[in-house]
Image (tube, rainbow, N blue to C red):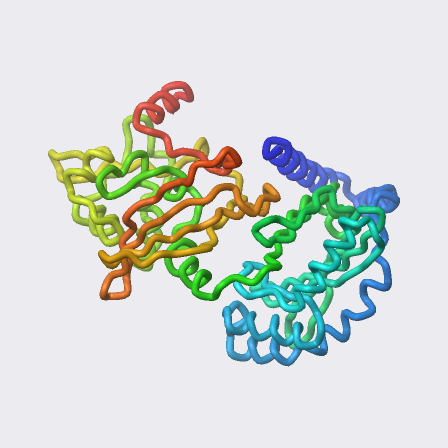
Length: 415
């Protein structure tokens, strides 16, 4: 499934590049070419029903003052601002949720009733609003008949005192499911004229909306301890490790993530042309350890055994991730669904891993133990993936090259 999506991504990208090149070299014929392409594709792009726009003005009038206030105070991406918009829409009868699933959905019973209609293959329709942290919202107009679900997706953006529809498209859901974890997940390839002109194709969309409410304490724990690490370019939450045995936890990846949190700066050791098979950065011992030891209870000897340490100049050898270590830019996120406060002051968090791109609201579950510190900081104590036959393979992750792999790669490429 993911392989097919990756191929789609690259094919769409290459198509877009080819289209731009064609326009660049075609001179005065570029306008005609563009018109012909859009015309030929018009039959493949579903018309946006006028009915889907009828209540847009009403929705905008409901929340426009909140967007104006947020813009004036520069708080368009503030959680409390988003919560206020979601609440306001709900008070006016609309099912609404935020794009990060950090606010309980309003009018959730309407969504559950619609899902029942889909299962019963009855005809029904509903509008669901997804409030964005980028100053706008997505309006999903859903219509079901005979078990199929048609989706009209419209994105509205607030700018300069006005809310305008930026793009709209439609598709029939190829995947539709209300999951045991309380998520409505649907996906398909949607089309719009604007999108097709740029990419010569439709765009895959995977939507994951939490319908069932979640305890706010759980969300706070997720935001405080799990989301700052996440799943991008690290294996912290996908391998088993603990303070007694750090296992396969990659501390170079952790250094990349934690450096900015400790210093408020980006990691200065970037990949460039001077890094060859014989070249690498050497980070002073104190600098490297100050970052790692702020978040892990680990001694120098153990950390050195998990990395490449140069004792002659008291430095850690460091090779930044290169092109061969890139990942597909779609990641899951952890959602705390339970916790236990332990006698030793640590907290055990039980979390589900939600992966919208794979249409999966529980890729797997894991337990993370954290140690809150008196200064407001935290140390990560352990991670354990809860075994299950239903666990999904972490296909989004590309491991960092080990020293031997790095040398082998550069020998093969002549670096």
